Picture (cartoon, one colour):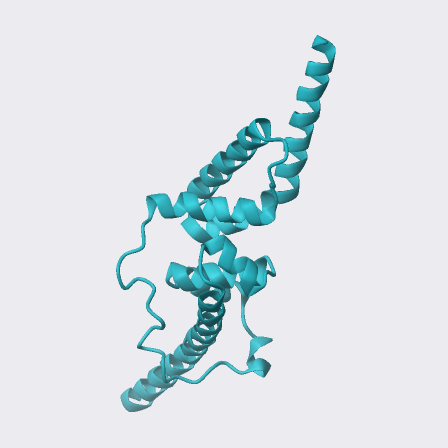
Amino acid sequence: MQASDEDSDERATHKSDDFAEENFATAYRFAFCLSLAHDRAKRLVDTTFHDAELLRRKDARATLDKTWVLATLHRKWRACHPVRPGADRDEDPGVSNEPLISFEDAEGLDCAVVLKTLHSMDPAHRLVLSLFYFEQLGYGEIARILDLPPETALSRLARSKTLLRQLLERGRRAPSAEREDSEFTADRSG
């Protein structure tokens, strides 16, 4: 009787290890997007997988999948970072009337610049974009993970994509404007 209990515990541990291994990259990417810090992301991921193991031991039929991991990470982060009133504003007023970066210009974008821009965005925008682009989730799954109505997730995703493109265009134009200013200053001094 004792041998079968040990075998059962060993299978459960192996199943938990497989679950953590299969979902670690996804969990870490999202946790980093939430916290923007390696140590905090690691802590969020570790506690989430610990919770998954406890849940699996308590209820062998519990549904543990990528959506559960991402929703749990978001819930844990929200518990420590409540939403401030007005924090989910629709857009940055400084970029609302600016042109979007064109599809042809997207090839010349530096990945580091895109990530820096993404990480500078308000969490409401950053999270939907992270789930959409990095995890390739649809708005329905994004809504479940972020605990939003589906129509809110869809409209936020659309606004966030527009905002990201506007911010990237602003960043792309800024260096060329600085060069023009420095050339003008050099012409006047020479």
